[in-house]
Length: 135
Image (cartoon, rainbow, N blue to C red; front, side, top):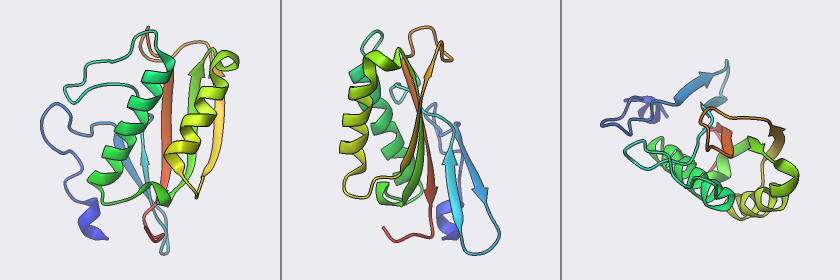
């Protein structure tokens, strides 16, 4: 388990700078990356105006973060999704979240927001992952 927690900063521009760890007492180790958004490995924003593309790219980024810590989607116990124009995009969020999560779906809070960090950003997703659960 300790090996998963080493070298948190990664390397290069895509250095997992948005990852933080929370460890609780006992045997439960939690990985809680900051909310992720649609970007490439150089940190450039992707998918301006395309909610579906931004969501797919954001989920792929979450997958890379989990791989970095040798964790899997099945260890995700909770997600928070922030979405602009939620009423318009709720079905997309629900469908893609279901596809990403598979059989073992985490609890999820989906909130509509007026704005996000970047002007063209339409979605942000943040997970809570239990590293002590089986993969």
